[in-house]
Each structure stands twice: as structure tokens, then as C-alpha cells.
Length: 396
Picture 1 (cartoon, rainbow, N blue to C red):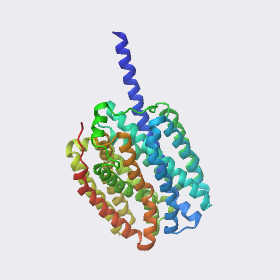
Picture 2: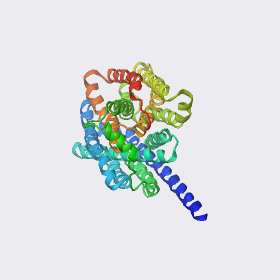
Picture 3: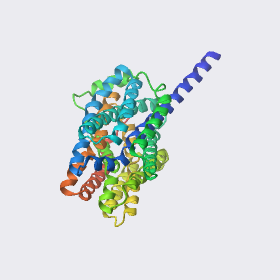
Picture 4: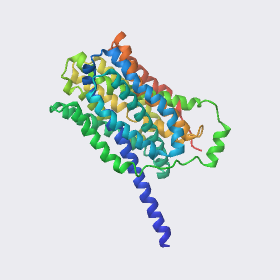
């Protein structure tokens, strides 16, 4: 009797370590990507680029991610999540100091390409790992996982903004973030999943009956919803500081406050996601979230003072907080496609919103202005409330 009990305890301990590892991996993604946000105004000034040229430069992030994400799902099937997570974290450690130093457009382009590759691969790997850990725990955990990503983003942007406001150089700020990533990786990587669980025979048979050469319409619509939500998040990360500087002429050292307010609200919303889903229901939390996010971004557009714009960014973060976690949970429950392929597809569409979207924002803003671009994104956020009806999935 002792051995089954010991095996059970070992099994419980292993799952607890995997959950903690997944939480830390999400934190590291948010930490590393958000740390870039306060450095953006300095990079733009150092490179002497206008909005359109800087937006074009940001396309390098999208190029790296669009190449990496579709192939990451296949790579994970062969080598597991742990290897992909390790390589992605190493790439992030390499490029963050370059963001703070480089005054060469060519070097910055390469760094942004690698940044997109690392962020895209890490996003796919940890979301697939999250689906498997959530499935093994038999309870909803996706909001907590994405909440840790938001918490990491909050820690990243607040740490770098605080260091810059205290007079630290961009390089010192980037190195502090790199040190934190190393500490997180020392625990998170060894406990990441080394192998991927395959679909059960019943799920495989069900998928075969409905298999298609292209992703199912439901998966594509889920990807579109995630794209819009991540587009809003990416716009807040990459353009909120520049928007406050250009519209309100605030000090660049405190321009990171806009994304800080966004990240605080998103973190609170995601950690309260399980409670909100129980009270409002999965369908309503998407509808109310889309309305709140759209209203917040419109408030940013019409704000007479920059302090009101901060409130708008907070509402945007709160509204967007549970849209993506709910959609990824639906992907984990669906039986229309193999989970790895479906997650790779949705992740590619979703993270392209935060990686390619900001580049398109910059290019468009040079022609029609950031105010109009933000208004268009607000309308797109309202579209989520309509698309929500068509993204429902049922478990087997």
C-alpha cells in the first residue's frame, strides 16, 4: 500500500512543479516583452526615425514570429516544450541589451527579428504546455497562466520605468531584466514538459472524421478574436508611450506609465478571471470585456489630459484581460483539430496581432494619425462581442 501512495505523492508533486514552471514561463514572456516598451522612445530617438519608418522597422518582429510560430507546434512534437522554451529564453537574453545600445538600423533589425522569433516560439510552447497542465489538473487555470504573463509585463514595465526615472541608463535597465530572466529560467526550464501528450484515441478518431486541409472556421474565428485582442495589447505596449509624448509632450522617462496602468488592470482582471467566469459566464465575460476595452481605447482618443488617457488604458487592459485566456481554453477543449496544430494556428494569428500589429499601426499613423488608428482598433474590439457567438466549442 505504501508504493501506490508514494507514487501518488510523486505524481502530485510533479504536477505541482509543472504548474509552477508554467506560471513562471508565462511570467518570463510578459517580463521580457514588456521591458521593451519603456525602451521604445529611446530607441526611436537614437535611430532618428519617424512613426512610419519605426513602424516598418517593427515589422522585423512580425517577420521573426511569423516564421517561428507555425513551425513551433511541429518542433514541439519532436523535442518537447522544454527545449523550445530554453532556446527562446536564451535569445531574449541576447537581444534585450542590444535594444538599449544599438544605433544601427541593421543591427536593430536583426535584434527585432530574433526578438519576434523568441517571443513567438515561447508563446506557442507555453500555451501548449498550459493546455496540457490544465487538462491534467481538471480545473480552469488558463486565466491564472495568462495573469502571470500580465504580472510579468507589469513587473517588466514598472522596473524599467522606475530605473529610467531614477537616472539609470537603458543598458543597465535591460541587464536587470536579463538577470531576472536567468533566475526564473533556472527553475522554470528543468520542470517544463519534456514531451507532449498526444490526443486520446477517441479524440483522434473524432478529429479524423472532421479533418480538413485548412483549419476549421471555428479555429480561424478564435484566431481572429485573439488577433484583435493582441493587436490592442501590442498597440498599448509599443505606442502608448509615444502617443503620450507626441500628444501631451510628457517626459519620456515617465511615458511608460501608460502601459503600466494597462498592465495593472490586465493583471487584476486575469487573476480574477475564474471568479468573473463563475459570476458572469464564459459568454458574457467576452462580451462585457470587449465593450470595456473599446470604451477604454476611445477614452484614450478623446482624453483632454494625459492623466485621463491613463484611465483609458486601464479600462483597455481590464477589458482585454480575459478574452485571450477564454479563447485558448476553448482551443484546448475543441475536437475539430489536433490540439498542437490548433494551438499553433491560433497562436500564430494571436501573437501576430501583438508583433505585426504595432508595425502596421506605425505605418498607418503616419498617414492618418494615431488617434484615428486607435479609433479603428476600438471598433475592431467591439467586433469581438459579435464573433464570440461563433467561437463556441463543445467537449467530447
